[in-house]
Amino acid sequence: MLAIDVEKLQKSFRVQKNREGLGGALKDLLRREYTEVEAVKQISFQIPQGEICGYIGENGAGKSTTIKMLTGILVPTSGKVEVGGYVPFKEREKFVKNIGVVFGQRSQLWWDIGVIESFHLLRKVYRVPENDFRKRLDELVERLQLGELLNRPVRKLSLGQRMRCELVASLLHNPAILFLDEPTIGLDILVKTEIRDFLMGLNKEYGTTILLTTHDLQDIEALCSRVIMLDDGSIIYDGSLEKLKSNWSKGREIQFQFAHPVKKEQMDSWTEGLNVQWRPENDLTAKMWLPHSVNVSEALSRVVGAAEIRDIKIFETNTDEIVREIYQSEKVSS
Amino acid sequence: MNNAYLDIIRIRFLTMLAYRVNYYSGIVIYAINIGAYYFLWQAIYGDQPTLGGFTVAQMTTYVAVSWMSRAFYFNNLDREIANEIRDGSVAIQFIRPYSYLLVKMMQGLGEGLFRLLLFMVPGMVVVCLIFPVTLPTSPQTWLIYFVMLVFSFLINTQINMLTGLFAFYVENNEGMMRMKRVMVDLFSGVIIPVSFFPGWLEAIMKWLPFQAITYLPSSVFTGRTEGGMALQVLGLQVLWFAVLLLPILWIWRKARHRLFVQGG
Image (cartoon, rainbow over all chains, first blue to last red; front, side, top):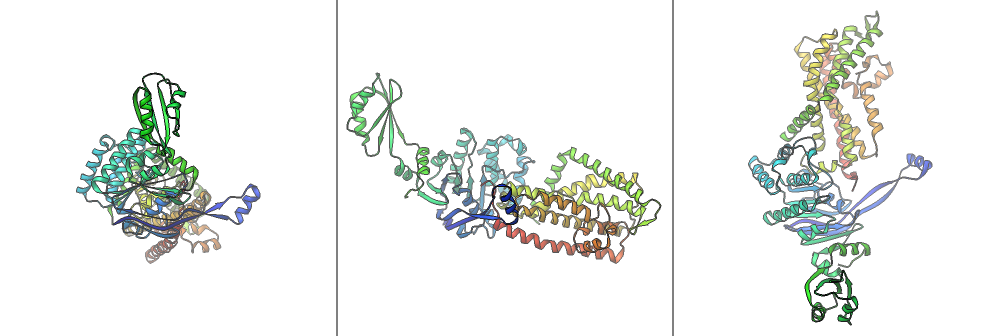
């Protein structure tokens, strides 16, 4: 069954134009001018149950707008959207019982009261039976190590602590689909890892479908079997991260550590005829960049035959770099 | 009813309790207001026995009761709603299986109950000791008054919601909120009883919901409106409550389609 089914989904906003100067302001007072902004343009995708899908794109690409339509916050201008068998903006109250949402940039806990009070209120809001709630809360608290935080008011939590609490808050009613809008924004690497592991476990154990937007591609690498990339309101890539990488990375890098100092000229001479580039880092280490067209074993064997080598490391092109390149070149054929 | 709403009342009540300085300063401000208006009216009456159909004693009671009921029905829901719309946090409310407006109303009620119990009741005792206030003796009057007070709260809250929801349509509805505040205080009769208005304005007031917030219930409480007339006043409040529901629901429905979440 499909968890999320989106077809030709579109959202346009009418944005007020502010004309310049005093004259402009006076004109605005009498007659407003608007510009139509298409935030999301006719996107289609399907996400089956139990999948973790990354939703990436530059700032302003339309990621958050999509998430807001999928969660029933925004009403689409046109197109079809179905999440967990519901049309989100209709039957909103029934629909949202089935989903969990975390916005990295907005807290959904009550600011003035203790964390545990927030959780109890959510239990009542979602009408979770007391027993289920206890079990679930204990499990979540243990996994995310919230123990001593429960009695503090939300405003006294650090960002990392708050984020973990937000996750618990979004999961207390055991939703089938979880939406995460930049869940790791501003967090340190420790908390990030913890949250990634937690989400992975959640997906494995309960088959929770997860859709997350992020700017941190390591989130995607750690979690997602699938990536949807958005640019200027349109989907420009939809597929596995592996394929994205192999389509887009132009080559790889191999780092050598030599036993004896080697000069750049020597290195170049070893690999003559191969289309590779050497970049010495110091006397004993150097990096060789080779495009996909060059056979790795051939390049390696030439170097290994010519010099005494202490260590070899192979670097795949960094996903960040790939994505940066895609963003810069705008259009891709997927 | 979903007891999540009851919890929301309780939480707001406790939150109010946490901000104690606000509470104490509130008592002082209300005491000063009542005192100021008491002496002002004393001066205005001079030797005259009645003005605008009020005796001095009735006026004193009217002033005290009006301010005290204001403590219950007054809330800042307009500002809260407008802020939540402007900073985009209203979006969060849509992912919860409850009605946002009802939640807001319950928060207002939590605030109102807090002031009723910890503010209005002790305040009334103090006021009765200082000023010559005469409270009604018939339990019926008290009963109907409390029912009316609930409707005062509802109508005022509805007006606040309408004002707050305008933030969906205009970028800044600060001016509107201020205007509303002055209008409610003036036209509801907290500052001057509606019967003191010039005839034409009094006639207009009859067609507006404001007098149903303070003037009419306070008139019943001070004994100027009695018996069947009192029930008629209650009926009018119910009518306004029902009438005001329509534009709120209409705006709310429209707003869902207009919702433009600020800050992406």
